Length: 109
Image (cartoon, rainbow, N blue to C red; front, side, top):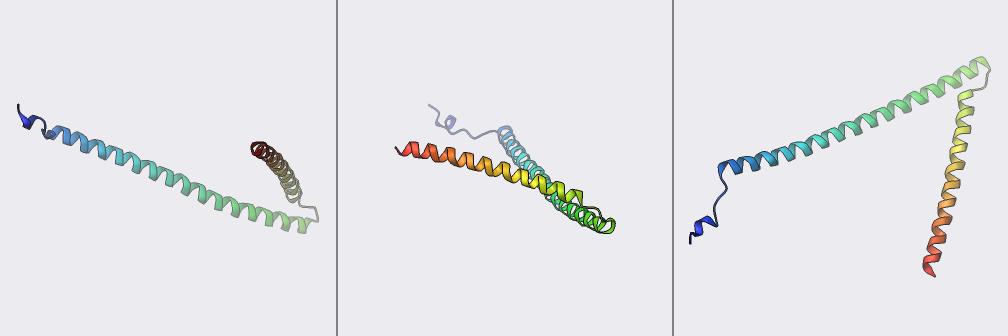
């Protein structure tokens, strides 16, 4: 019996392959994090730019409405859209709240 065969150490090639695999996994994880960070950064910057542009457009519309004496059409349309969304979400919330309350009451009995 040869006990040294049981405790044989990995060869240099096995150690090199193991280190290469670890480096590849670490590189892939790092690339994923950097990519996700870049996407989040772009979306956050875009959100600020859109907010500034919307504010500027609303101010310009109100200024032009004041100068020309015509009503601000964007404000009127925006109020209608906001009202429609509010009604839709209120209806959906009431529906799901009722459905969950019914399920919960049924589970209690």
